[in-house]
Image 1 (cartoon, rainbow, N blue to C red):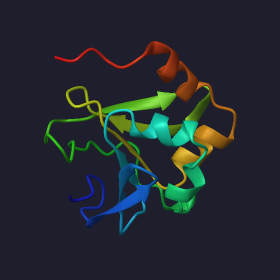
Image 2 (cartoon, rainbow, N blue to C red):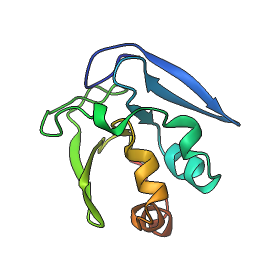
Image 3 (cartoon, one colour):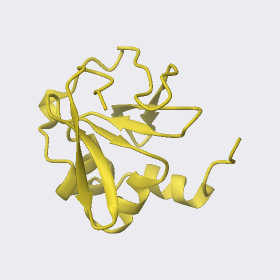
Image 4 (cartoon, one colour):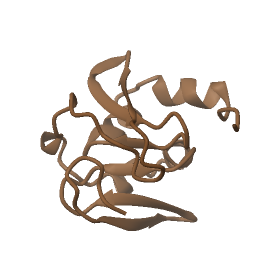
Length: 124
């Protein structure tokens, strides 16, 4: 897989039974459906998100989903408006820049809790 932001190669990182894709260039993370929630619940955010938050790329950049090649939508955590990430409206994958996943789980953000409370998205 190729990174949707910097076009570097993504490497598979295993956290228990979950495989996450991490960019070898910018250290951004791609999460397939619910992988981020499962890793956050297991308390393993720091194990997978090893990049420096200072490496974050331009959040205004429009990117395509690395799985289904459709335009992703830009999202923001209302509790931490400095955190911008991209979400695919078709496969429900999410791309977070280096350091953002750690901040979402470590800084007391309610975003992951709201995602978990909402349940899985309806399957098309």
